[in-house]
Length: 240
Image: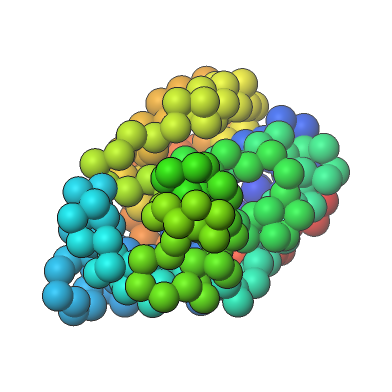
């Protein structure tokens, strides 16, 4: 039995799967990640991306933050790939109970997934810091300089978790509950290098930990099934 057949067998035999995913799920939709060779971290800017995407930089140099944010974080034309679509199908069939994602692009929802815990927020939610009015990502994309609320004139902030900011406690609680109750945990497209998100797998109590990634991760030795390759190709080959 090869690895894909083993994965198929595990999926066939359970109706309680949780998927935990990272940037590698989105790169196959042409959204660059931060830490790959071609990721944002290897490109040149006036400031390092991790500095620009910090809470303190956002407050101190909001115009520069938004110049980078519009250019490098808003991929509104991106479409779900085979991994997103298969996960949505598994949920519809009653096999997948939740998706826990580090991504902020909303592609899981665009593919049809309903139960998605976004650890780092979403580019599709933006709020006025003064009155709380909500705005979509296109409003931010189309705005000039610092986006302002069309109701009160206040500054708008993306509902994404910047460096130096904490994760949403409710989302964390829901993600921990889903992972701790899962029979099968599939981890895909993540280096498992970003904490506290990567630490969530410590809450998994099941005995079928599946790890799918192109490159090795610190957790490879813990996997019951380790598959190195494209998350879209591997999940796309699965039948529900």
